[in-house]
Image (cartoon, rainbow, N blue to C red; front, side, top):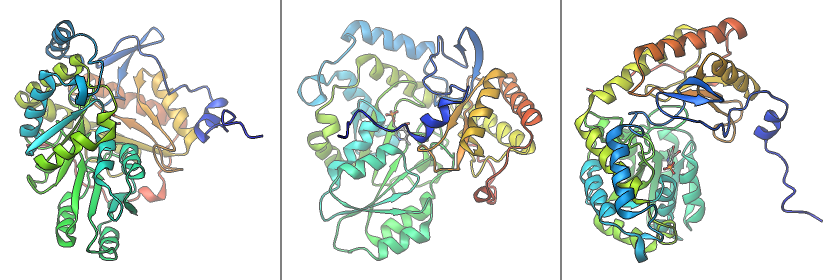
Length: 408
Ligand SMILES: Cc1ncc(COP(=O)(O)O)c(C=O)c1O
């Protein structure tokens, strides 16, 4: 008889079983530009705190004040008993910052994306980039709409799928703004043009780009000068805003529909008070200190250029998400361990986060890194190249490079 508890180990678990590297669930004893692991201090080059705000005293103080005033939890969902004045203030600020009539704040970014399922009814069709984040994939699974996947950033493929679909059906295109593992931007101008031409709605997940991209940090939409051209924007407060929480920003009527119909909002406890206050304080800093964005892009450019000159394959990234392709999972684990031994914590990204044979080391600088930190990261990669020899580039990665785009 089959036992639901008798699951086979995943490909990653099998690879890890006989490998000395332990890249996952590693407990950190302290966090910041440097972190403590097993009693050693190493450079944190593997987190999404791009602007370094999660440990900024202005953010942590705001969180501490809210914790004392409102308590540790909202003890309920937004709809019944969990909405605070802080949530409403945050929604007003985010709507104005991201650029939409209204905003809905959720407990996590994952839940913000799951909320999209409430827009995907039977008879509708959703068109999704094949490299979309898991939370968008799951939103599509939860919804009742038909589902078409287009090849990553392949606008011609999307055009064909849209052209072949029923023009009378409700149609919606969903994409990441900045792809979270490979560091490339969605081709927003083309996506906007296609959505308009085919009468489809366009949703962009700005989890990694809101706060980071565009002169004002308003994300990929501002970066491409397309304010007002994207129908609905989702995002997270766990990356550039140093907190935890999610957002949906768009037309007031759509946001109102989601407030009453999105199950990930209705049936889950609200974002904790400390997180809401931390996000508000972070938003002040995101607006007031554009030099943080310039700094993290300067670091990214140094990393991308330095790694490429060492012979590493960094794919199409033009952003502070710097992938170093190893292709092979075991090689990825080996490189990760060598980097940790050399004092640098990175992320080993393997299937299912990326396609099989597209394993990569994900390196992310932060605004709070010094130039010396970046030098040490590059030195660690140089040491790995000396010890392991050239890390092979997968043929699929042999694509023309675009220049690193630094925000004005
Ligand atoms: C592109 C993207 N969307 C959504 C999420 C989910 O955000 P959160 O961590 O706030 O749940 C993530 C986080 O990893 C992400 O990378």
